[in-house]
Image (spheres, rainbow, N blue to C red):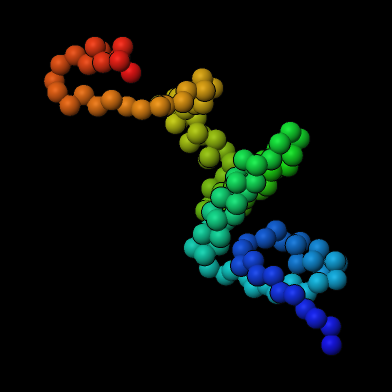
Length: 126
């Protein structure tokens, strides 16, 4: 008998991954997600995974990781009954209301004004 090693993943994968695994001589054990709520939860988990990989990537690798993030977001958009145009319009509204990220603003802290009055005297101490 041949010794077997079993690696457990329990995660959403791209459609052709089982075929690729079989091509490598291994046996994929898969299931399909029928429920939209479970599929959306799986896609959101996958988005976190892909974003973590993007954070670790360097140089030209980042474009491939961005492509993975884009693929997951595209599947989410489709499953939720929206379109890329809907998302782009929502992003434009938010950008008009709250700005984008072009100015590279990094918020360090917020000093709350707990009393009525002028807080500007605190700026020099911060």
